[in-house]
Each structure stands twice: as C-alpha cells, then as structure tokens.
Image (cartoon, rainbow, N blue to C red; front, side, top):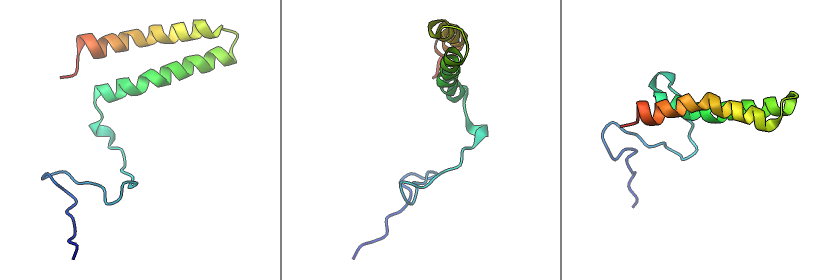
Length: 83
C-alpha cells in the first residue's frame, strides 16, 4: 500500500500540493534585490517602447535607459552587494 507523502521535508517549509498551485506574493517580504531585478527589464522595456513610439531613435532611448539603470546596478553589485 502506498503511504501519503508529507508536504514538508524541513520544519517550517511546505511544498505545494500540486506543482501548478499559485502562491500570492507577499509584498512585505520583497528584498531590495527583488526590486532591482524587476526594475531592469521594466526600465529597458519602457525605453524600447519610448524609442518606437516617439521620434527619439531607438539607440538613443535604449542608451538613456541604460544610463538610468547604471546607478541601480552599481548599488546592487558594488555598494550593497548581496551576502
């Protein structure tokens, strides 16, 4: 006979009952690195859209987007690196 497998191997952690089970995001548990990682594609996507929609050349809008991201990347990697 098969026995029911526990949903947790380690005390305090729980595996989803099914692999497709959705978990709500707890916004208070996001770290600064989560925000930095989310900001990178958002800023570059906004720069690309701005380059396509306005008369600003795409290369210029992407360059401006990368200059906006440069302080964020320096802060996340050099000034306050993850431990």
